[in-house]
Length: 112
Length: 117
Image (cartoon, rainbow over all chains, first blue to last red):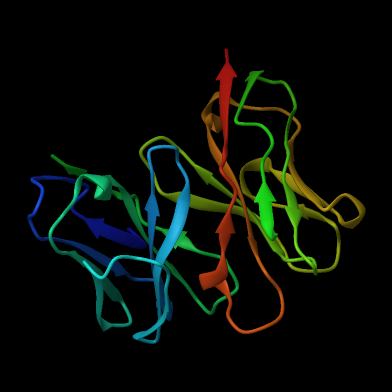
């Protein structure tokens, strides 16, 4: 059973398009995250949701909007995609907020 | 400035050899400390963590890490490396105190491990 699953695994699209990435966790965790990993493997948090409330929104362009319909889901919608958005996006979850995260396998986004 | 540093970008070891990956942090108070591993094409997996207590912590897959307060270090070790250990390894910290928790998790830049047969 996949603990944190995200779809799609690969996403190739044109500049200016709008796309969504979906994430679901079946661990019963109360906190979910979106991370961006750049081409140099550097990981940076984008969003964190605890019990469906946004805790943090680092300096992410407002073209990125997280949506959490319930505690088990955290989707990422991206408007007006830019070349610089190309990266691997990881969803993660945790019970509580002590740093023990479970990660999905990532979505590789390529903007052409 | 607060930071977590992994001095080695890339390490190559032979299968069966011992391994040590370095991690140093710069925080006012000892943060919560973690090691994650990322296999090619996969997400990150937690290997081990240190919150308090015994400074030598055991993790999964035969890994251990030792917290040394005097050196502000949390190095990861394995006595005998297997080919399947080839991956990217990330040290991470969560600052103690103040508000917030794992949303403050900060990752090092990673160390890529190559294992030669």
